[in-house]
Length: 262
Ligand code: NAD
Image 1: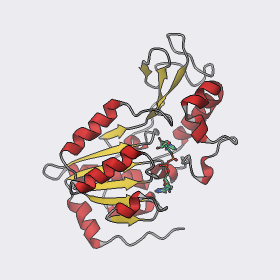
Image 2: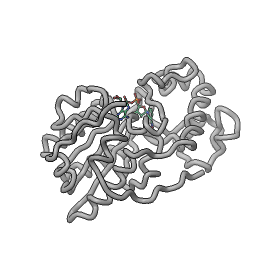
Image 3: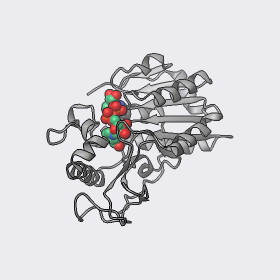
Image 4: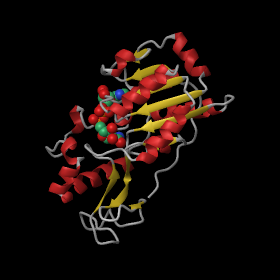
């Protein structure tokens, strides 16, 4: 068990009075819910490296195998719950919104929907959602339940007769403009606090958002048990699991969680 580092008083005060809060989350925040990260020890699936499966090449090579992996991940998500870290962020959103001019945005790289289930309302899914699908021919997206995925043929077929794929951003693909636009619009009014949680921060756009927020005046905080390059540039780098640090940093009552749909 990792001991939670002592949270400096000045940081607690900062969180307690922040009015514009920008949060970036990665796979690490969901690790304590039992959702493995790709790069961690638990990441491998049936001897396959997820970094190979979550790619256009992996899907083209073997769409059935890729879908089997996604279907297992979907099934796992139905069994897991948001953890204390997700809940603390949902709480922070309510606290910040109650302050004059208060606003908070979570930009998550996760595709698991756990922030929304914990009660967070303003969430941008930078890498899409594992529960949505997209037609590889028309590009049309489908919500969960709109097309047969679970219990149907694998790989699933769209109404246009083409392969369906998960509506997520794979390695080597560009992030769609719509989520980027929503994040940039939020950042036009500079945040006073930026939290970067559970990401190895290897993508340039993640680092750029965090460092731009810092240069615009935000206190930059990283929460990750491992050292990252970004941590060296943060005002505070708290090296411990998010599910331990966040409840300490953000005390109070949590909003009611939403049940999983579908
Ligand atoms: P990543 O590169 O962001 O690495 C995960 C990070 O989380 C690591 O730096 C690790 O030290 C940290 N971490 C581990 N446990 C933690 C904890 N308890 N608290 C805080 N930090 C913790 O993520 P990845 O796994 O390599 O995934 C890359 C991409 O794949 C993601 O950006 C995402 O799009 C997708 N992915 C999503 C999920 C999900 O939705 N839950 C899971 C795996 C991968």
